[in-house]
Length: 494
Image (cartoon, rainbow, N blue to C red; front, side, top):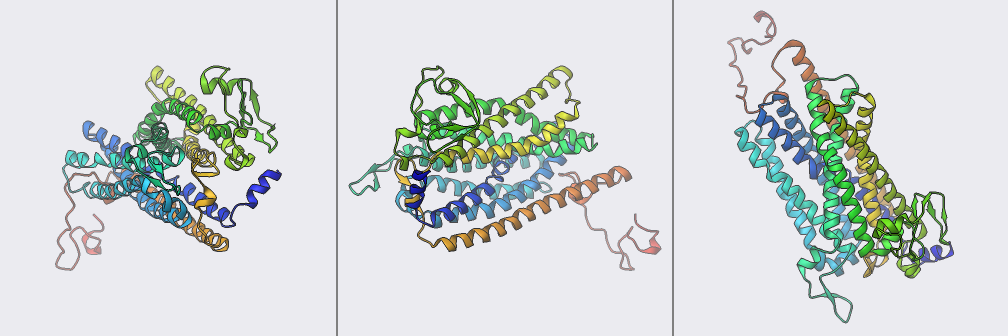
């Protein structure tokens, strides 16, 4: 406890509000990232099914998902822009010293962002103005642009975790930058694929969860069945893949960032036959309170045998490792992520068993209850993944080269706290607007569907079949009303 207090006393007063501000904006923005990265692919998958099978329901779903995708992208512009400004304003020491080494990743992300904006605009514009297959093929680069954006961000983050591709001059400044090495760092591959699959899996479960709720409320039509089945199938296929990728990423951390691994697994002293703790709390004296202890399992998971040596936190000075509180936070985030991933595998197996046996969805309402919660659970794992990555690296902002306290701005702490309050208010308004817009769209679509089903009339303009002839305004009659209009003398509405 005394060592922790001494470490905190040496940090500048503006460090805490700067970290809180960055953490809040990142935690908010990351909730939108799965839809920016993966929703275009899921939408195009439904779009392709619609065109290949001439399926009007699939086409309607694809069109509506594209509208949600556009709204989400607009909200992501706001949160992402704030985040990029904060990176420069709150951490000038990072970009000032290391920007020439790893800044290309942010440049790639910026180009991908603009390309994605153009492609989304073309996709929305083309629903009523392009030939069906032409429209589809023009949108195919959209998921690729989203993956390119993820490539840039993960390249920058993986460099901060395993920096390379430079030399240091006599003053300690980076020189002789090798761009290829700076991008493709040792941790880049495991981190990138783990992140990308997590985005696809999360988007699939969230979208399917919306229709699972409708299914539980008695909407058993083909619209809800197809809206659930396609994204859930994508997510279910990727769930075991993601579990293996996560295991590979954790093992890469074990080899390349042993102190972070020690924080994730709350390993205090370097040793072999190290036990695994499920949850539990690390104390400042190295003892562990609570949790489920499984003998030797940590060494087995790290190196496939009990004799594997696991590096402990005490192998480096206290100033160069996470505190006991930070290690506990990283450990809990990691364990929550693993626990949810294991439960999702069981859900995917339930779905696969039912489909293989009956060629149908599970009939149990409990399955759909779990499916409805799966999307929320995935969003929790996304948050936990970033907590593990960032908190486990402390106190380094560039691993073993620059500490967070050395990179922070010299702006007064009071100003940063005020800025945090403003950002919270703005983000609550932004996310509230996003939710209100999506709910309004859902209500409008539901009313249009129910009205069309009850009357047998043509769908409302926003839900009519794309690629068909556009409705032309009818000529006005001599009395100033349109033919078939609501003039009382014309016999009422047509």
